[in-house]
Length: 263
Image: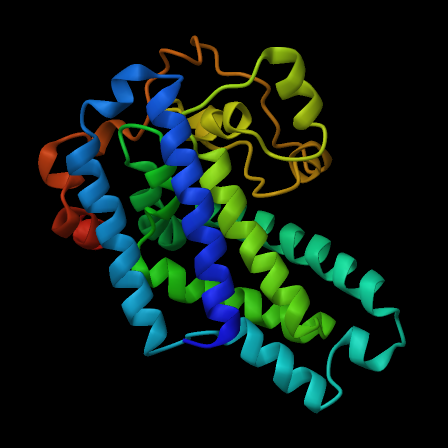
């Protein structure tokens, strides 16, 4: 593993440990811990499978694309002189907007939803939900993000920073934690909070199809997909998809096969 990979892994592991400890000490929804051993086996099993597959397929596709674009003078920032810090900041914002639309499209396009529903069929909501993605979606996402890296000519270090932020915020905003309402409202002016993202995992489809943001919360307001709170009490709301609540659908083999099942 290269230096960039070790840096990202270190950041990921640190934030995961902090969020898991926070959930253990002060869980917002205490019942989430009841099925944790089985759920974590499935969720982290998916993470390990995805990590193994990407290592031998797309790997560090975004960073490789950024390096190649720089060497060949491709992309907006490699064609137009922009100060490095400003270019990096813009790249992070553009990539976050692109991932917002990627996420939204996975809810709109039926084929994409078949794979993305693996993430949404988790019947509880905690830090492990952040890594619950089908390997095919992970690989497709790497290709999608690499296209935008090439388009804007993002610097490799901007890509490393963005990917670290993306994984870190995913762990944070899937946390089974809660901020006091005034502080949460202040935070979500800029970034996605756990209370904001929890709405997205509601079993009510109008709520599931909202709050797509990953890091910045502005995209949901700008593109009219923001919902402040669920109709039910956030503390007691039902998480997941009604059609995939059985034990078979929640197993590791079950979620790997889920996209290929009949509707």
